[in-house]
Amino acid sequence: MTNSSEEVTFEDLEATDVISVELVPERKGLILKHCEYYVSSRRHGTTVTRRYNEFVQLCDVFFAKYPYRAVCRLPPKRVVVGGGSPVFLQRRRAALQRWLTLVARHPVLAHDADLRTFLCESSARLEKPKHDEFVLAGTQDDSPRQMSMDEMQAAFVSEQEQLRLVQLGLSRLFKIFERVEGRCEAERADIRELGAGLSALSSPSPADSPRWLAVRQSMKSAAELATAMGESSEEEVDYEDGAGGKVLLALDALGAYRELCGRLTRGLHGERAAAAAAAPHSAAAQLLRRRHGYALACSIEESRVARAYSLAALQSLHALLRTLGAAHARTAALWADLHAALRH
Image (tube, rainbow, N blue to C red; front, side, top):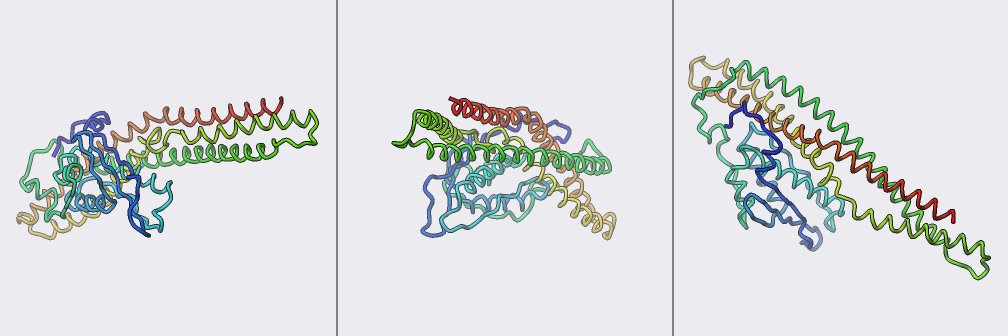
């Protein structure tokens, strides 16, 4: 276990590894097509091919092995005839990349042998462990801690509430950003449709007078501008991998931490009740108390990881606002160009 008093920074986490998950261009299957992914790790210098079910296997191993760690849930699997829409596939790819990034940069999980197998071996056969981290690490024996049990319990309650508020705030901001981006995309779609309408009206007719021809020419120029807008919008920076990436990464980390807190709260109550029911000095009661302390110490470490991602997300908001502002500025400039084209 790492020293819970050490501050965790996003820069330290980011330096651990850089993960890339990309869709294999050709999907397999005759009717129910499935996707494969190229998974790359800068730390190991490897690229392997993985299916969604292999991500599920690794996730199951981590939940069994690390019950006191903040492990994210995978994005849901959706079986669709034909393989699913491109938007769904790209969003799931981005979510899988964030999930694996959080795992590969985690102070403890990054050194897991099963993760290394997943990232490095061409065929990853993973089996659920028979014991969890507490047993596997040999932590049944008491180890000196810088905080007492009461201090760790108080820190657990305090951090849980503070990070809950951070999660709510970031979620609220990101929903606003999504709505703004959605309106911007809808406006771009309207401009493309406007271009199609102007293009249809710009076709000359033998009966056109000079004034009609001038108007049609201006509509043709405006239609070309609107069409160019449609082509340039395809080159927009990926919102999830780009400016909004750190916010989504933080929300995933905070969601995993909140779920961990729920598990620990339920588990700690049960452990305290079991310890109280057992003889105070029995081996079973002592083991429960050690596990209780281990769980609290892990929760403090996990809160520091969640804080590091949250701080990085808050510090990236200016870049996110700049990206959204630039997109709206380009749209506003196009409206001005369309206005100028139609006036001639």
